[in-house]
Image 1 (tube, rainbow, N blue to C red):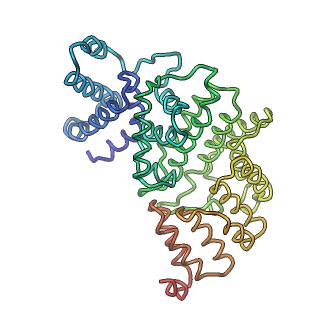
Image 2: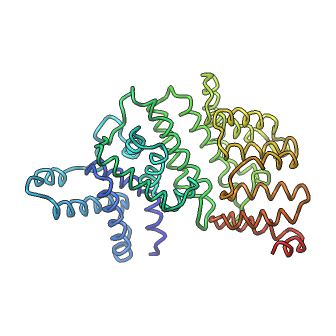
Amino acid sequence: MDTAVIEAVFAEHYGRAVASLIRVFGDIGLAEDAVQEAFAAAVVRWPADGVPPSPAGWIITTARNRAIDRLRREATRADRHAEAALLHSDPDRPTDSFPDDRLRLIFTCCHPALAPAARVALTLRLLGGLTTAEIARAFLVSESTMAQRLVRAKGKIRDARIPYRVPADSELPSRLPAVLAVMYLIFTEGYSATAGPQLTRADLCAEAIRLGRLLTELMPGEPEVLGLLALMLLTESRRTARTDGERLVLLADQDRTLWNRDLIAEGQSLLRECLRRNAPGPYQLQAAINAVHADAPTATATDWPQILTLYDHLHTLTPTPLVALHRIVALAEVHGPTTALHELSTIDLPNHHLFHAIRADFLRREGNLTEAAAAYDAAIALTANEVEREYLCRRRNSLPSSCIDHVT
């Protein structure tokens, strides 16, 4: 048995295992260490014994036993009764009326005592199993900076004794923005992996959508909850069309017969429900943009003026550099690359590969091929995903050799 099986189990069940152990033991560090030890044990045991019938159950049980062993070694006499209770606890049994440990963990990590960036980063680490490096790239910060944030966040939860539970109804609205941001970033990492040999991570996309569905059950009256789920479904509908073999396929070149029409229909239905409530928010606007793409039978039939109008509204609500960057892509389709390049000069994203890749495309369309080659080089240097890097290299190498040689 190769390690791919264990890696698949890790990707699918790491978050569940950590969340289950945090509920039982109330200690994030202990839960993480125990789950990591359990996976290390699986690497040794499963090749010899075979994959157990319930891999997730094996991991959780093994991690629970490792955690109890550690507590036994460290416990004082006064702790023995608590240890005995843990021996008979069921890590899969919920402790309140909401039966999902992972969603409970999100709300714990999104406690208002934590800084907003720390809330999202900690949940991505504990729930999604993302590495510190992957989270750092998602936040556009250094790995050391993100490591410090994670340590501080875990310490804050421990020292402040932040409870591991879904908040009361009165507390839910204040926690919602950070919870939605967590789900969106988990989905985004799954849809466009920051690093590695694959463009997407289907497990993360599925987990984010699953949690989105759970949140709609918990908060059915929140338009932005419905909007985020609609956005994820409409985006996910295109995932399998984004690659041809191991090559990246841009939206304009995708085979639209491969788009998942069931997901599109569900996403559009949720979006219509949002519109009836007349309380537009950033996720609803992004879902609307994706709905416009889904409505177009061909790339040339895309209603770019409508998309640009939606991006104008989105940028008013969320004036971030990345939103501005995506708005400029729509601007280029409506008013051409020259206007878009002028707008692009106002954005400060020197360390984001997408900025340079988009600039390279605009320069190419303008006929400025030497500068386009340099922009492709900048994008390639900042790209950690192998599929994206291959695409950018292919685009750069398709330029006339005189332009490439001049840059080199």
